[in-house]
Length: 224
Image 1 (cartoon, one colour):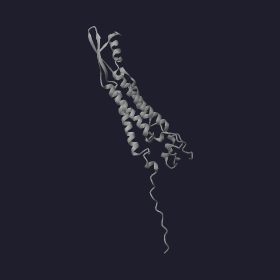
Image 2: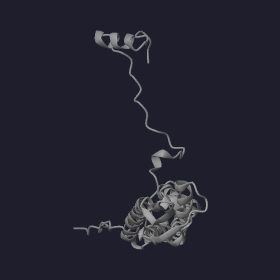
Image 3: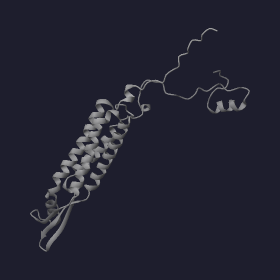
Image 4: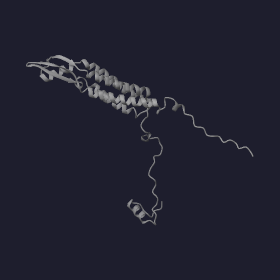
């Protein structure tokens, strides 16, 4: 009996370098950084928007009848943190719509939005200009003075929210290349899109097919 030649057994394909390395878009590290970036960015923007609407400073305006208590919120002191929080939210969404250099630019915008919100909130923590303007508007006296000025902790909470946005931007800069982009079905790649199956000619032996063809405005006598 002649020997039977051995049939080569197919071996499992080795993992590619991309899938084995941490640079794979769907790697565990990429998923963790993506989740962290989304959470930090969304939470930071929410904190900034909410905290900037709270009372930042309070005091008493001297009037002829005594002292008039006044308060101003973060929007009265500075509208920069809230505006940058909105920009940060837009950049957080846009980072998934672009790739390559565009993604790095958007990630940098996200980080700068957080940095700007933090700095402006911190600067407004001890600002009494808004109280002076409120006193002048309320009393009708441009020279009205404020006594017993006090500042709340809300500016620092706003600054903390800006730091969260900044961290989200830094994560996008560092790991954004591993994050997924929008689905390719929205892109024009030149590949044909699946369409409707061509209609077959109606069967003359099936009257219902003829009526359906007439309803569609087709000539049932025309051959396919």
